[in-house]
Amino acid sequence: MTENDFGGLFAAALELNGLSAYASLADEFEKLTEELVKFNAHTNITAVRSTKDIIMKHYVDSLIVAEFVEGGRVIDIGCGGGFPTLPLALARRDVHITALDSTAKKLTFVDQCKNIFDLNIETLCARAEDAGRGKLRQTFTGATARAVAALNILCELALPFVKTGGMFIAMKGPGADEETAAAENAIQILGGKLEGNKIILLKTPGGETLTRSLIFIRKIRPTPDKYPRAYAQILKKPL
Image (tube, rainbow, N blue to C red; front, side):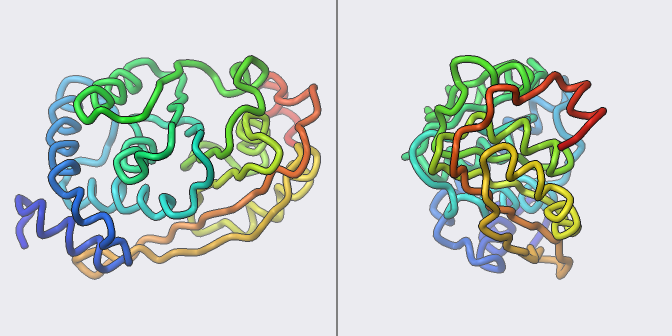
């Protein structure tokens, strides 16, 4: 397979990682790649450039969470240029996704793709700690976040959005066990309960592997009104 063989690379990457159920979306993901490369040429929203890396680091890495998303209304905290938002929206059209990020230029790309693919997405340009105290507080059945902050900080940004009974899925790297242990106090204070984590070794068509950990936190009671705090406070004194 060559770098230009999107269909072959995409199919191989999905098969290696048990994601062949999404193979029928190859044309949409190839078009998404074209739009990403075109947009990135004038507005830098990702450092990932090669087709193979885009497929692995953005698409496969995002799609592994698709089967675990519960309910119909999910918020993606710090979505950046749309990951996992865009792959998740293509794979799970039954789910309404709010893509939250504080950088408007990145959300411009998400909105562009929403229109091209008619996706069930709305964008919100805001800081999570501000939006989490507003009308969206405790209105989502689920939340996702990928590589945004340490888990104890991330929980204070994400859990206020989630309804009681909902699920927050944090997408982390190899150090998930240490982060989870350090976040136990935050999870408890914010109304969550750890339901475990799943370590996934993502296999590339070239033979390399990437480690992704999914941490599942169930919302079992409302988050106390004092959270989330201002970001400076969160950083100064993490829970």
